Length: 546
Image (cartoon, rainbow, N blue to C red):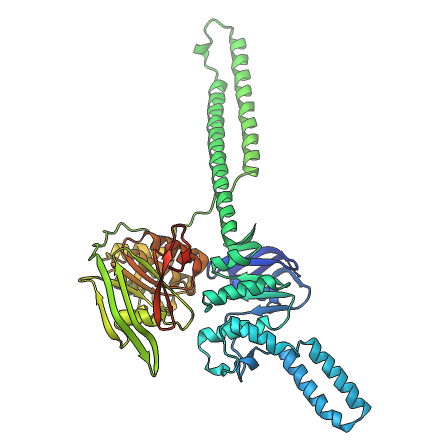
């Protein structure tokens, strides 16, 4: 369905990727992963035919549909917005031909028959039923006005429009963004039931593990492909990297040994070639000189043989495994443990207009708990966190432990508002950082201006690394994080996962990331229908109703 051969893409003097070769066949479900800025969206645009490669070729068979990250929906209702353009045109032509039937002419009957057939082939007769199922799966109201949707709802409407427009290959860029667990599970089922081919650029590991048959990773301008979903692919990648490291170490040892032996032979040959009369003793002079010359030639020949062996070794040289040294780990003092009783809430209620978002909530958190808040979009997770932090009017009582320090991060990076530089952002997370430590962390962010680098000019990747660096350096005893994986790539999410799993304090985390929930949570709160229900976390890490 899609074939890419030797494709390259260059912006200004920067090569995004080169020599990319890829085949996507009917029924394939390819996961496309890579760091932010690695070129995933750029590659999807090449596959869709929106951009041309700077080198190589891209060929397509059948219709290719792209879900991009920056589209906007049409006017009218949500149902109007998700109706494919071809179907809208076929419906208008069918209605016009139906109106002309009253003329009774043969031309009118012929036009009606053709318009009706085209409308049928476009799926007009069963579209509303199909649209209803898709909109229900994505938790959208077809009668709502498209222009009044929230950002997350708009994203889901764009996904619905794409899924309702038949294609042989679907290119989906972050399709599970703004989907809750139920929406993601519905999409997984839809993809598995479809006979189309898919290329999925996503950071959702659980989603990729559920649907992907192959995984392709863009890394440092090259595309590497592995069988299976994300976890299987990364396990194989780690195994290959370990084997490469062993082969590289063996290559280095052999090269060192050959060079040392070659140096010894060369030195010995040069020494033998300088005839010393005093060494000859009672041996005839000519015979002694001939023997020394012969020894020198023999040693020189062995040295040349070793040189050829070194050349062959270099021709088959093993590349040194890539080592990422961007993460900076500072020697920081441990945070004081703080009180054992971290948080208690009683009869907590929050109302907006006439709607009660939370009602009579009772919570208790102890030191070391890692509490993950889950639930549907709009269920009240962010509202609960803001009420606990005192940012929203509420009734009932909320009591934090005496002397606790909190680190708070919102969905949109609100915690950085009012801060001008990288250094300001790091000091806000830990005021005790020294100038030397600030420079160390800034170097890990790969910003040219050090701590004085303006936040407003950070790239997406730099902003991601800054968020993780702030979590590494904070000495706060409680982390309150609202959807921290938004806009993070898979590598950054796994780094976040490691930070939270090793964090000695208390964590309150609202997230839709199912893999992160399984691997980090010691407790889980389901926030839904104005209530908070505690679910059990089993020993295996799976979450079951309590």
